Amino acid sequence: MKILQISSRINTGSVGRIAGHIGEKVIDNNGLSFIVYARNNLPSKSTVIKIGTKLDIYKHVLQTRLFDNHSFSSKNATKKLIDHITKINPDIIHLHNLHGYYINIDILFKYLKTRKRPVIWTLHDCWPFTGRCAHFEFVNCEKWKTECYNCPQLHEYPKALFFDKSSFNYNRKKEIFNGVENLTIVPVSYWLGNLVKESFLKDYPIRVIQNGIDIDVFKPNVLSYKTRSKYNITKPFMILGVASNWNGRKGLKYFIELNDMLPSDAIIVLVGISQKQRNALPSSMVGILRTENLAELANLYSAADVFVNPTLEDTFPTTNLEALACGTPVITFETGGSVESVCDDTGFVVPKTDVGALCRKVVIIKDKGKAVYSENCRRKAEELYDRNKKFNEYINLYKTLLNIC
Image 1 (cartoon, one colour):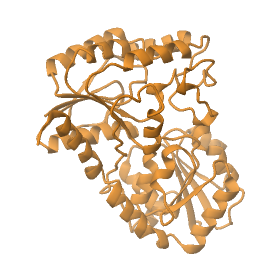
Image 2 (tube, helix red, strand yellow):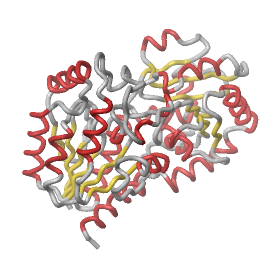
Image 3 (cartoon, one colour):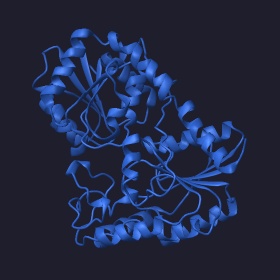
């Protein structure tokens, strides 16, 4: 079994870690794993191949800004990628995010349509079936169901400065992405799977495989009090928020509002903020810059009494899973696939943007105590989100597509 994955990153960021972990599972099953990446990679057991250069990415970004043709640049890089694929001759090509300024989808899919071997496409967001955006819940846009036009997020990722080609891009993607033999779509949440069924990708087989995490890294730590001491967290009740990029969609403003409502013995700690954002935080909050140290992140989850995720759009956030695995209850807005990992005995789901409701649920957990939830949180993570179990679903899918018993 020879598997080649295409991902913008390897072992960094949630998508990059998923690709890396799937590669490890392939190797554990005596297969050969290759991962093609464009930027940011941490050590991997798979054979890794870099596609393009920094200059290629910069050119792709410029093309997107000027002409709104994201994913239609990087022609030479994609042709070289196809040369690598041809030499490796994998049994299965497994796609992840194809946006990110590094690949030409027209060239790639013309090649995929010439192959008779299986293709898997793990969808981590909505980009594959929209005219340009990765998410649309924030702006309540449903144009993707028929045809995108007059994009309300023209100046959001992937940002365009002058032209709106969302209609053209939508129809080109619809043409390009359809017609691949043996393509299986794998959304990472049931919420996203339901959207795919309403999109122009609906005729492909759809198999939901939710994300998994390393529960041997993310686990309760009885020494988490040392983490509190390290960051000078002296108040007894700790509320944690984690994001790789605290933009408006991740809900930073709601933490600021929540901070004004909390009891005096509670403190908010945010991980992943920029230095500028940290400088602007109220003095009563603690800001920690982004870290790739997963053990340190696990210690922070363990040290917290509750994990709050006020995201306004999300597919299936692994931060929720990491918190649960560390025995920490989760409170999230009723957003996308974020609600799928939370139930009554592991936390709460509150109406989107309702900070008052958010605060009330925080107080409930504070009054009951984290211990009431911890065992249920950990058990749910072990049963449903252990990466060894979740990514074994990919191995089973590979074997099914290859008719391997």
